[in-house]
Amino acid sequence: MGERYAAVESLAMNPRFWDGRRVLLTGHTGFKGSWLALWLASMGARVTGFALDPPTQPSLWDVVRAGAGIESMHADVLDRAALDVALARARPEIVFHLAAQSLVRTSYEDPVGTLATNVLGTAHLLDALRHRPGVRAAVIVTSDKCYENREWDWGYREHEPLGGRDPYSASKGCAELVTAAFRASFFAGGAGATAIASARAGNVIGGGDWAEGRIVPDVARALAAGETVRLRSPGAVRPWQHVLDPLAGYLRLAEALCEDPQRHAEAWNFGPLDTDAVSVRELVERMLRLWDPEGEIGIDAGEHPHEAHLLRLDSAKARTRLGWRPRLGLEPALAWTVEWYRAHADGRDLAALTRAQIGRYMEVAAR
Image 1 (cartoon, rainbow, N blue to C red):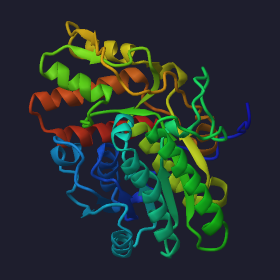
Image 2 (cartoon, helix red, strand yellow):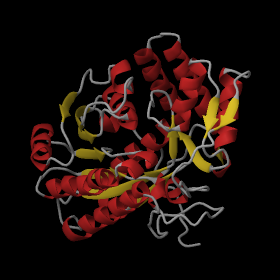
Image 3 (cartoon, rainbow, N blue to C red):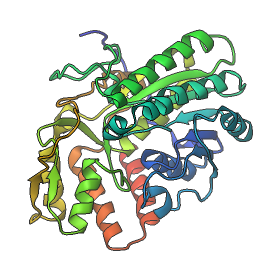
Image 4 (spheres, helix red, strand yellow):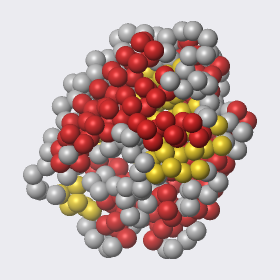
């Protein structure tokens, strides 16, 4: 089934690498972006964020005060002039591109907007980067849904064909093609060229996600309100992982791009263990055991747009060549997630809890 990887080249991400490092983070007000902004700031990075206003209310960005200690620019990734201003102001050594329309169901409602943000937004950023000296590395975050999904039982590898039946998945496959084309055309070789890599993660869970139509926020809202949890696709299998696991992969990848750009400027998967790819129903049943064993599960029998039934990722390449591996299995990932949402329901200090979970993760990762 394709490539094999021989040896671990390095270990987990290095917090000392980020102290004083200048970073531009697009999409910093979103779920994953807010976690990454907090993490980078906690390691001493000088972060400039570039994004629209938080996409939900409540939002992780607001409740944990993620903007403290970073510079924040609120603009659209489709605004090329604003991107140029952000790059000039931040003077980044490293760029993380997370700005995106991230929901499959929303892509059916606004396919053109989804394609514009996810494809043209990526192209705008990459084009801006090729005119900006001094950027050593850029990690372009796409999705596990960029693959042509054939409902295989095994995980997709980085060389598998790209595709996408729904507008969201197609947009992420296109973003990968755009990234590869810009890398080959404008960033290949040469001293000082920006090293460009793409990162594909699974279905992330964790505290602070409030997006409509995602199962974990739906469960949290239902349980907090004492309502039945209703499932659209209870049998759908997804590669679930705590948000900090793929973020650790993005950080490690950026370090590797700076260390040896020629060997790492390519596509990378950051998925969970195969045993952590479970059905929606099983995921929810495990959440209920942790939060409310008396909670009820029902089926949303309405008509719903197509979503893939089975999806897995193979992350052997990241494990062997980057030294990355998922540090939280599904049980602790769910426990940390439930801890966060219950704290929100109880009115606890979420800024302190979120930073504490980052600290706990770093302790686990250092073992």
